Length: 435
Image 1: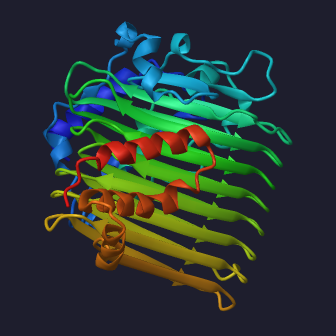
Image 2: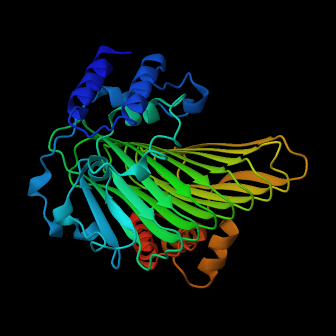
């Protein structure tokens, strides 16, 4: 471990000293910190990081983001809010109640600061917090588990149906380069409940910063959750995200991962289909430009029979950008009658853009239907010719085809304000596309 990294870890430990650590949580933190001493910092010599060089992160003057975002006001955040949503705002990793619009006091469900719930001694946390996202072989998850300070806690009781989405708005606002945030979210959806969740990461400055976030999701029997993870941080940022879902009998989880920002972004989306009849839909879109590197690793673990998973990831790459997709499907011996499908499609719009795609299947059951496929290509010449023959200009025809390619993913999002924002982002991103 480098001296610079060790100093950064010591700084995180000092900053975390003021966190509320109930007796049951402290051993998990200590185990994670011990694991950091055993794990090496990720490098391209490791198979899981072969295409993603995270070493530039260590060149930053890393320090824990300070709680100095008081200068931020509600109008600063208005462009990032979604209408009709309850919003929890976190500035540089700390909850800002004055900028948030949580559910009314006395509501049957909970959406609040995780640090606040730890301070209140919420007994519902012990069973799930730092239980589902394993840090045994993941450096950044171990880092987060050891040093997280705050994040969101959402708990929806059995049978409750949320009529409004919940947005978690994480804002990077530090005025010093190298500010680091360890955010931790815990989402609990009990039996027969329904929730729509928007998890958003943005920057208010152009300075490089580091976000390392872990979101643990537990879905009880027949629970339904639609989860939108939207990452649009500045072009100097480093964004590392891990999402781990655990699904009980008959539950339905839809995950949308939309990555458009950061210098280097790594999203690891995982679900464990623990009980019979669970269904997971993993939906993703990454738009990379300039020198960006956007990496998605997904794991769908079929542990029970009669479960389904469907995975659709699309990438659009321009300039000298780099995309990575590694999708794994595990089917355990007990998971008979599994139906799993995985598709990764990539649109490369320049000669210097690169995509590394690696679909994987590991099947240990014999009565299953599992397929996977990956494609890399450019815009279809015949489709371009058809549009141009209808009087559409070359540049406009290219923009139409790019939007159609992305629409396969965007249209699966049921939250209307999110779809509208993504459609506008696509318009802005490719407005100046050349013929």
